[in-house]
Image: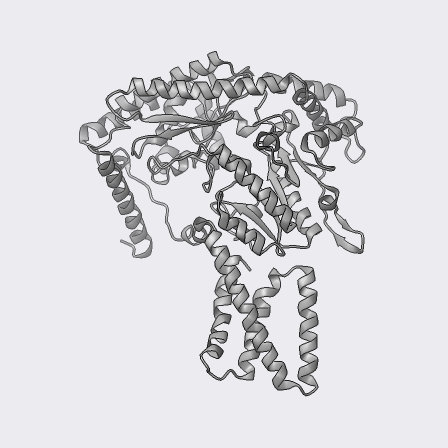
Length: 625
C-alpha cells in the first residue's frame, strides 16, 4: 500500500475514534472493525521487530477476551487503537507537510491530462504573435528543414529507419520538446547524431560534419574521449587473454577494490552493470540489513529508471515504500527523526544542489521561461552536514547516489566536494573507463546478503556480467588516472575556466542584446552547466536545433543539462560562446523570441494560451467537443 493509500485508509479508521470521542456508543463489532482496519493499514508498514510486538499484544488481548475479561479487553483495544491513531495521524500530518507536492499529485494528473498537438497554423502562433512574426518563423523553419535535408542525408536516412525499430531512439526523439509541438517535430527533419568517430572534444558524424560535444555522453565523459579510448584499449590489452570468462576473477579486481575503498572510504565493494542496477542493489541491501521498509528521496531527484525510486514522471507503479520529501527543508529532517524506526535509508543525489526540489532540467518541460537553477552550494553543504548528523543520531543509513557526480565534481566525488561522508556510495558512468558499470561501496554491516542468525533470509543480489574482465581492465586504467597526483590540478583548472567562461559569456550576451533583456544566461555547477531563458516565450526549445546547426551536439534533454570534459580548454570554451551568440541572434532574427509589450503581460498571455489549450484538450477527451 502506498503512502497516499495509507493516508486515505487511516482517515476511514479515524472515523471510528471520532464516534467514541463524541460520546456515541461504540459496539463490539465497531471496535473489531476499527482494529481490523488498523491491522490492514499498518501491518505492511511495520518492520520485523514491530510485527513481533504487535502479534504478542494481540495474543495477550485475545487470551483475556476468551477467558472472561471481555469488557476490559474491548476497552483496552479501543483505547489502544485511539492512542495509536492519534500518534499515526500526527506522523501522517508531519510527513505530508514535508512531502514534495508533485509526488502526491503527479500519479493522478498523469492519467488526466491528455496529449494535445498544435496544427500547422497554430504551431507558429502559440504565443499570439503578429502575423509577420509567424510568417518569419514559418519561413525559417522551412529553410532549416531544407538545409538539413541536404546537410545530413545519411543521418536522416538512419534516423528514419531506426524510428520504427529502435524504441530507445523513438522515446528520446519524442521527448525533446514541449508536448503540443511534438507531433509536428516527429514528422520533420530531426536527424539523430550517428557518429563515425570522435576527435578530442568533437564528434564527426556519418555525413562528415564536426560537432563539438557538450552532451557529456549522459555524464560519462569526464576525462575526454581520447582518454577513454586509451582506457578501453589498455584495458582490453590487460584482459584479452582471459576473454569473457565469468565467475572466476581477474587478478586486477583486487587492485581495483583497494583503490575504490580508498576513494570511497568504505569497507566493501559490489560490482554491477549500470548505475540503476547499483541503486537497486543499495536499496535492497539497506532494507535487508536494517529490517526497515522506507527509503527517503528528495524533490525531483533522479536515481535511474527503476520504478522503486521514481516518484514523479515515468512511473505507473506508485512506490509503497518511498517517501519523497523536500530538499533543504527542516520539515524533512523532522520526518526522518520522527520515523527513524521505519526508514532504512536516506538517498541523496548531490546533483540536486544545482536545482533543489525540481527534476533534472529538460527542454521537454519548457512551457515558457520556467527553468531555474540554484547557486546554493554552500547552503546545500550545510544541509548535507545537518543530514549527516540526523542520520547518525537516528541510526538511518545515508546513501549518496554518485552515479553522475562521482568523479565529476572532484576525484572523490560529492563526498570530497562537500566534505560530507555517506554511509554508502553508489558509482557508475565514468568509473568504468568507457565500459558499462555500477558500483556500490559500503560498510560491512550494510553490505551483508545473508543473515547469520536466520539462514533462510537471503538478499539475492548478483549479476552475470558484474566484474567482467574487460570492465575490470578499463576501470583499472581509469582508477590509476583519477588517483594520480596531478589529476586534481586538471579538475581545479576546468572548474576555474568554466566559472570564468560563464561570467564572460553572460556579459557578452548582455552586450549583444543591449536594447532588451538578454534572451539567455548560462549557469554552472562545477563542469555541469545549463541555459536559463530570461524572457517569457513558448519557443525556447527550438534553440537546441539552432545550436546543432552551429555545430554543437546536445543530448536528448536539449539545453537542460550539459557538461564539459577535462580536455576542454579555455579556447574551446570561447569557440562555444561564439556558437551560442550566433544561435541567439538567429533565434531573435527569425522571430522565435518575439515578446509582446511588457514582460508581465507577455507571461500572462502565454499562461492564458496554455490554459486554453489544456482545457480544449480536456473537453475533447471527456466531452468529445
